[in-house]
Length: 311
Image (cartoon, rainbow, N blue to C red; front, side, top):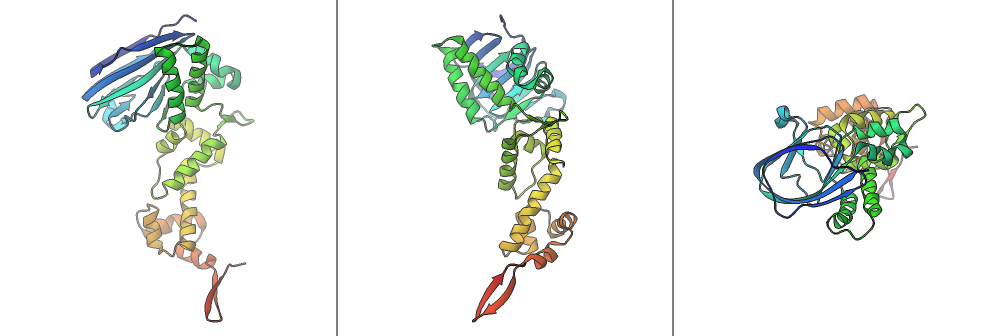
């Protein structure tokens, strides 16, 4: 497929420091950029076809991005290591500090994307996936694939099908497909995605993750994630996460030797009263009453205290 991308863009305060490396493939244009961004630099980008950006350094501290210039201050978020931008979705960027960066841009004709996805997902599910933006910070695997592709963009050594297969792997890795689908046709999270969420919630048990943070953990947009999560678990992300935090509270109440106030502080609740209210709503008892019911009974044998588990 003969293809050259169509893109509207404008930048201020960003300059290229090395010649851009380009390569045209079947329905794909790959471009490797090395640039320097000044503090306060701005950019606007919109392409007629889907595109992927993969950064080879962490720019989240330097670059903010938004899909709405009018609400940039409120809607801006850190630029992640890998970003999938659907066709005709605008993107504005702003640099907080002077820095150098390098990234791979992949412009892919929408029909080419469907050729990747439709055989496994079906056309309807593939089109739905193409409409969902994706932002991934933990992108080590994708960055490795992108590094191999940069070599083929700048100095081709193999047939184009090798580079195209790398692009296909990046696409499927970015969109995290295929999603598991139930008999009723609803998209569900994969077990791998649920494992990522459980791990993240356990690591961050000291505070509540937002739905946006949970969605970013599995590389999905917030709305897509919310619907898939509810179909997967039967509950909302907030309710599910609250249950996980209460599970941790139970463990601390039994094993940690902590006061209820200390447990509340450790898990990021505003105070003891807040934990008590949530705990009672979830479990049916206050933390103190629940601990009394479930704490092992104590008995003294030959001058030693022995704990016996109930039941």
